[in-house]
Length: 142
Image 1 (cartoon, rainbow, N blue to C red):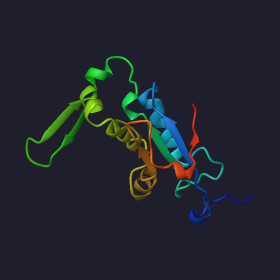
Image 2: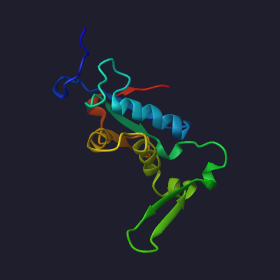
Image 3: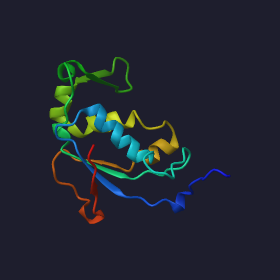
Image 4: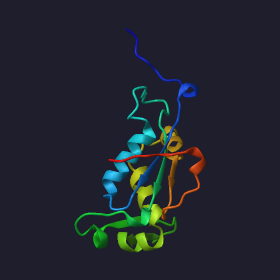
């Protein structure tokens, strides 16, 4: 018996919507990354993008456990010497709530060209409205 290998032009993509309100950040990110990669499908092939589109709404209402709200730090570098910038979870959630979820999901995606291609199917919105109603997204509960 031969192994099944999905071909990129044969993959049917669906749209799923996840409501982040009251959900824990890590659990939300693992579900979204799994859908984006296509690991929930029986045709999953590691070297082919078999994943679906994911819409995350209410990004500003995502939860974290313990003292992470004050203690968790996000770091980036400007490229100049002494250019390390840090911002706490609490401040980033007030300023750019979408970036928190994007950062968590991107860390769970494969590194390289295929991972970047899969990551482009993620759409994150801070409020309850999104502009993908025409795609008729299914609600993903977990």
